[in-house]
Length: 156
Image (cartoon, rainbow, N blue to C red; front, top):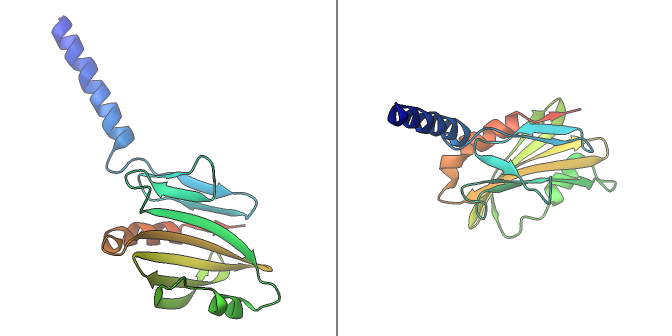
Protein backbone atom coordinates (compact mmCIF):
# COMPACT_ATOMS: atom_id res chain seq x y z
CA UNK A 1 0.00 0.00 0.00
CA UNK A 2 2.77 2.41 0.95
CA UNK A 3 4.56 1.77 -2.37
CA UNK A 4 1.42 2.47 -4.40
CA UNK A 5 0.72 5.67 -2.43
CA UNK A 6 4.30 6.88 -2.89
CA UNK A 7 4.08 6.16 -6.60
CA UNK A 8 0.79 8.09 -6.79
CA UNK A 9 2.33 11.10 -5.01
CA UNK A 10 5.37 11.06 -7.30
CA UNK A 11 3.14 10.78 -10.38
CA UNK A 12 1.00 13.71 -9.20
CA UNK A 13 4.11 15.80 -8.53
CA UNK A 14 5.47 15.00 -11.99
CA UNK A 15 2.19 16.04 -13.60
CA UNK A 16 2.12 19.33 -11.70
CA UNK A 17 5.72 20.08 -12.67
CA UNK A 18 5.09 19.26 -16.31
CA UNK A 19 2.06 21.57 -16.37
CA UNK A 20 3.95 24.39 -14.66
CA UNK A 21 7.14 24.00 -16.68
CA UNK A 22 5.41 22.58 -19.73
CA UNK A 23 6.76 23.08 -23.20
CA UNK A 24 8.52 26.33 -22.50
CA UNK A 25 6.41 27.30 -19.52
CA UNK A 26 3.22 29.21 -18.97
CA UNK A 27 2.40 32.39 -20.85
CA UNK A 28 2.82 35.63 -18.98
CA UNK A 29 1.33 39.05 -19.61
CA UNK A 30 3.18 42.35 -19.56
CA UNK A 31 1.26 45.39 -18.35
CA UNK A 32 2.60 48.95 -18.30
CA UNK A 33 -0.22 51.19 -17.03
CA UNK A 34 1.89 54.35 -17.43
CA UNK A 35 1.89 53.71 -21.21
CA UNK A 36 -1.56 52.14 -21.37
CA UNK A 37 0.13 49.07 -22.91
CA UNK A 38 -0.43 45.38 -22.32
CA UNK A 39 0.65 42.30 -24.26
CA UNK A 40 1.09 38.54 -23.99
CA UNK A 41 4.67 37.29 -23.82
CA UNK A 42 5.81 34.11 -25.57
CA UNK A 43 5.63 30.86 -23.59
CA UNK A 44 8.53 30.54 -21.18
CA UNK A 45 9.17 34.29 -21.05
CA UNK A 46 9.07 36.38 -17.91
CA UNK A 47 9.21 40.04 -16.92
CA UNK A 48 12.46 41.22 -15.35
CA UNK A 49 12.14 41.73 -11.58
CA UNK A 50 14.15 44.97 -11.62
CA UNK A 51 12.89 46.54 -14.85
CA UNK A 52 9.20 45.96 -15.67
CA UNK A 53 9.81 47.14 -19.26
CA UNK A 54 12.26 44.31 -19.94
CA UNK A 55 11.29 40.68 -20.55
CA UNK A 56 13.27 37.61 -21.45
CA UNK A 57 13.22 33.95 -22.35
CA UNK A 58 13.92 32.11 -19.09
CA UNK A 59 15.84 29.48 -21.09
CA UNK A 60 18.27 31.99 -22.63
CA UNK A 61 17.97 35.40 -21.04
CA UNK A 62 21.28 36.67 -22.43
CA UNK A 63 20.37 36.30 -26.10
CA UNK A 64 16.56 36.32 -26.21
CA UNK A 65 15.00 39.34 -24.64
CA UNK A 66 12.69 42.21 -25.33
CA UNK A 67 12.13 45.76 -24.23
CA UNK A 68 9.48 48.47 -24.18
CA UNK A 69 10.71 52.03 -24.53
CA UNK A 70 8.97 55.33 -25.16
CA UNK A 71 10.30 58.55 -26.58
CA UNK A 72 8.91 62.04 -27.26
CA UNK A 73 8.45 62.94 -30.93
CA UNK A 74 10.22 66.27 -30.20
CA UNK A 75 8.36 68.18 -32.90
CA UNK A 76 8.89 65.55 -35.60
CA UNK A 77 6.11 63.74 -37.41
CA UNK A 78 5.87 60.03 -36.66
CA UNK A 79 7.32 59.21 -40.10
CA UNK A 80 10.24 61.62 -39.59
CA UNK A 81 10.95 60.20 -36.16
CA UNK A 82 11.00 56.58 -37.37
CA UNK A 83 13.19 57.52 -40.35
CA UNK A 84 15.70 59.23 -38.02
CA UNK A 85 16.03 56.34 -35.55
CA UNK A 86 19.61 55.06 -35.25
CA UNK A 87 20.28 51.52 -36.44
CA UNK A 88 23.36 50.87 -34.30
CA UNK A 89 25.18 49.51 -37.35
CA UNK A 90 22.47 46.93 -38.07
CA UNK A 91 21.09 46.38 -41.56
CA UNK A 92 17.38 47.11 -41.99
CA UNK A 93 15.85 43.95 -43.48
CA UNK A 94 12.29 45.26 -43.67
CA UNK A 95 10.26 48.29 -42.70
CA UNK A 96 6.52 48.32 -43.14
CA UNK A 97 3.64 50.43 -41.87
CA UNK A 98 1.02 48.68 -39.77
CA UNK A 99 -1.70 49.39 -37.21
CA UNK A 100 -1.34 48.35 -33.56
CA UNK A 101 -4.44 48.56 -31.37
CA UNK A 102 -5.84 51.31 -33.62
CA UNK A 103 -2.59 53.32 -33.62
CA UNK A 104 -0.34 54.07 -36.58
CA UNK A 105 2.82 51.96 -36.29
CA UNK A 106 5.93 50.88 -38.15
CA UNK A 107 7.36 47.36 -38.00
CA UNK A 108 11.13 47.21 -38.44
CA UNK A 109 13.31 44.10 -38.69
CA UNK A 110 17.07 44.63 -38.51
CA UNK A 111 20.08 42.31 -38.50
CA UNK A 112 23.60 42.31 -37.15
CA UNK A 113 24.85 39.66 -34.70
CA UNK A 114 21.24 39.66 -33.45
CA UNK A 115 18.02 39.97 -35.39
CA UNK A 116 15.62 42.48 -33.87
CA UNK A 117 11.93 42.82 -34.64
CA UNK A 118 10.24 45.91 -33.30
CA UNK A 119 7.08 47.89 -33.65
CA UNK A 120 7.16 51.64 -33.19
CA UNK A 121 3.71 52.83 -32.18
CA UNK A 122 2.52 56.44 -32.51
CA UNK A 123 0.59 57.46 -29.39
CA UNK A 124 -0.09 61.16 -29.04
CA UNK A 125 3.20 63.05 -28.93
CA UNK A 126 5.23 59.90 -28.17
CA UNK A 127 6.55 56.76 -29.83
CA UNK A 128 6.30 53.46 -27.97
CA UNK A 129 8.89 50.95 -29.17
CA UNK A 130 8.37 47.25 -28.41
CA UNK A 131 11.20 44.97 -29.49
CA UNK A 132 12.37 41.35 -29.35
CA UNK A 133 15.83 40.06 -30.21
CA UNK A 134 17.50 36.71 -30.85
CA UNK A 135 20.79 35.56 -32.29
CA UNK A 136 20.60 35.89 -36.08
CA UNK A 137 20.79 32.10 -36.62
CA UNK A 138 18.13 31.45 -33.96
CA UNK A 139 15.68 34.16 -35.08
CA UNK A 140 13.67 32.02 -37.57
CA UNK A 141 12.79 29.63 -34.73
CA UNK A 142 11.56 32.50 -32.50
CA UNK A 143 9.96 34.76 -35.09
CA UNK A 144 6.44 33.22 -34.94
CA UNK A 145 6.17 33.66 -31.16
CA UNK A 146 7.60 37.20 -31.34
CA UNK A 147 5.06 38.15 -34.00
CA UNK A 148 2.23 36.58 -32.00
CA UNK A 149 3.22 38.67 -28.96
CA UNK A 150 3.46 41.85 -31.03
CA UNK A 151 -0.01 41.18 -32.46
CA UNK A 152 -1.36 40.90 -28.90
CA UNK A 153 -0.38 44.47 -27.98
CA UNK A 154 -3.29 46.49 -26.63
CA UNK A 155 -3.03 50.23 -26.03
CA UNK A 156 -5.59 52.27 -24.15
